[in-house]
Length: 118
Ligand SMILES: [Zn+2]
Image (cartoon, rainbow, N blue to C red):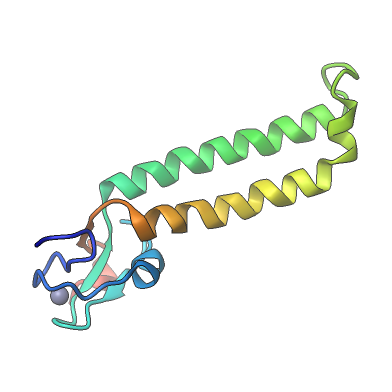
């Protein structure tokens, strides 16, 4: 049975959720497969999700900042009060959510970065 934890090089189930989360996306160096020693990363799906999620987080940060500055009026004054926790929360999400998604969704693919390919 092929699962998302199978190595794309040798086909063995050499990854677990933690290792897969740490493998990063197409633009990262990747993690070495325990079975064949070749590097794997989370594939296109994970990379696209990450890019989209990063943009959403950035938009949220800008939104919270502008609202807390009363940029568009004072009806969202409560945001100013929670500005720091909200910003910290969004930044934490930005780091945690993609790793969770990498751990439990999408397939592994061979690493494509030049410095990952021997
Ligand atoms: Zn392998």
